[in-house]
Length: 108
Image 1: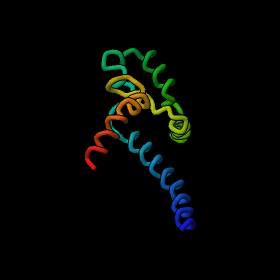
Image 2 (image 1 turned 60 degrees about the vertical axis):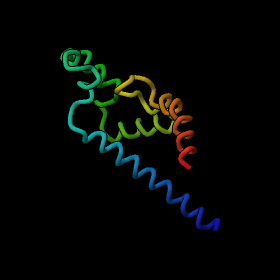
Image 3 (image 1 turned 135 degrees about the vertical axis):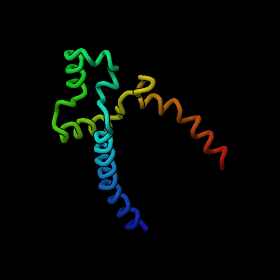
Image 4 (image 1 turned 60 degrees about the horizontal axis):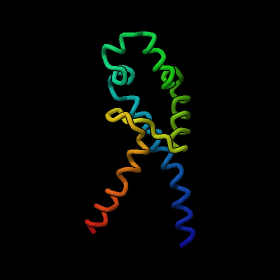
């Protein structure tokens, strides 16, 4: 039994890496410009501000560097900020977790 669990845990690592790579690549394949979305159409016309945001988000780096930086942030628990609310995604998840758990327990 412990051999089975050990094998499954070892398979978890490449699975999580594969899912993270796919997630990262799918985010980059979404049409549109992230900086324009973040700054808004009129604010994005200011090229200096636009370049500052691109640099702050590391979008001027090669894709592999962006992935490593993103993965490092995720492993540290920094999931970024919501595009809708502007709050930390981690804080939003922590805040909604008790309600989700309560609803799941009620459904049982």
